[in-house]
Length: 465
Image (tube, rainbow, N blue to C red; front, side, top):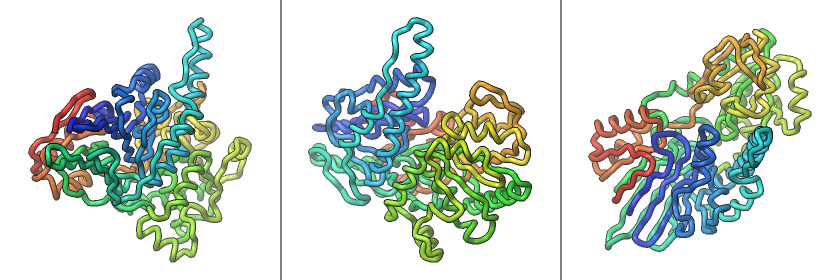
């Protein structure tokens, strides 16, 4: 077996790994690389693998940095199966067309500028129609059900506890009268998060590929996050303000809605109106509702005790789809909370809500996820005195709160604890999906607990197992 690391190494974006056995070629992940516009377009356009020779694609979960280049792969000629869990397939049905729509919008904006410079127009990486077409190649697979996906290659999906449908991927191949077991962690979830199951314990394997997003950091306790959320809502509501929450449409939105549902049921926060203003988040939430088999026991118990069959819907919550409804929220009386995409406040309706809210000191902005440097969310989290929205500067007078404990990623201690039972018997471990410092820090931690060979690959590196 040979592995070529094509993406998702030295960075947390663009995951893609080529697995070659004696007879088969498997692409593990096909993520979108996200960075500067020109570099991203070039890297995503040129997929560094012979697409005609691929026998199968295996996908760990639906996040765009893992799935987002699949429409382009199909557009360039791939016509084989794409294996994923059923929930991942359903999430991709919402997310990939949305991604295609964004590519079309982005190219229209770029082409306006190119036309002014008499430059030829660019084509989108893929369109919404391309994304819809790619969905016909998906094959849904249950957790814990081994499936032969190519000759002498078997895959088993195990619950990674990251987002709905997320999986660690166990690939087993037969070569030279022996079986090799390669385990890819996917993105491991943080234990005790609401809604989804905790990550499955690590199974036996010969080789391990492990993510390292938080390889050098630890999260605060989950219980503290819920207490802090209640305190923020009470404080802002009491002074008659509104809370704007930039939130990722997948996972993060559903988790905070679930916690707000519990807090209202427990009468720990006032019954203020709560709006989720994101068509994608609404579509994703419908997918969550269709997959109760992925819920953890806590969520099932809460639904039983509350008598409410829907963890993502309660009488103070409204989902907003139309543009007219979204605009009307800016004139809705306080107090209220608006949860809106995008998570880093770089696009979408949340920018309009921030524009109308951040100049009033009664209001608050609640940041609940990691913010990439130089994004609007990053500037707000850094409490810069002025921020630019739609090309106009606004004074940041609203109070700013950060609750990073909602991260769907395992932290350093979680990752090491998960890998520890098999650390001394794994023949080699490859640390992926992390910026250089977290990846190196996790690699050192793995060595300290007995892993014999630990590699931190770079893009283009090849290893023979």
